[in-house]
Length: 295
Image (cartoon, rainbow, N blue to C red; front, side, top):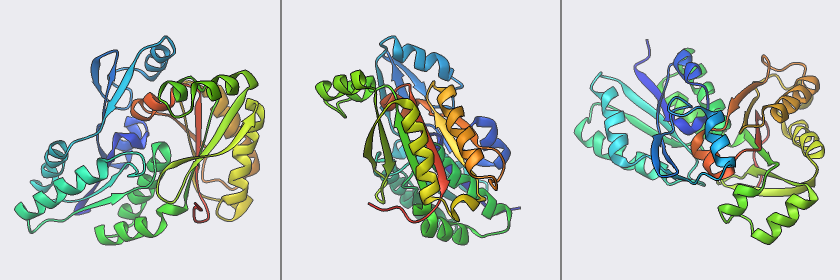
């Protein structure tokens, strides 16, 4: 049995049963929906379809990250069991949660000098971050030590590609990420922005593509361009989607056709309520292992 636990934030956007099956622990972000507070607990408190339906109907959302005190309680629960902790956070490029986790870890290691807490910035998000956690679990299960697993993550996390597109710009306008004028024109013209995550873990717009059909094809083209071993890619591929299962399925079908050596079928997850509060419905994200990310 391993002498350390693997932990992450709920924003890794895998199913609760997946985390449990892989023995990956998680701690929950928070969000508000029309002023009512919830934990981002993988759709347990409020189902994803209800969450996105209410967003479409005009519900206001706010999110809050995990604070240092919550991390202290989370980490200490394992330390008291005589376990070390490897915790991987949501990207520092989109959240300050890494700093909160580091602060909690430093305080606890003064109180538990015989124990180890290693905190790593994933530079990832959603099910791409989840794909990284799956690899960490693979390494642990194969007998890697905490230090070996942590070193592998640090050395390889920038090979994990995150590509996103959105077909509904409403919530990008509402959140101020694009201007009302640009967003309105974009929706009239059927513009679907294609984004990816850069080396600093920030979401960067890369292309403005007209029509959903073309952006679905282009996101798969990006995988063909960047995947490890090209179309001989034999790793896992995850997709996350926010209330657009049909679009996600079309991407998955094209990926499975283009990459016949995939490790299993493409896994489709939900964009969780924290990240979904900012993207809104209509977002599809594709995650795979490939070449080093470029700025």
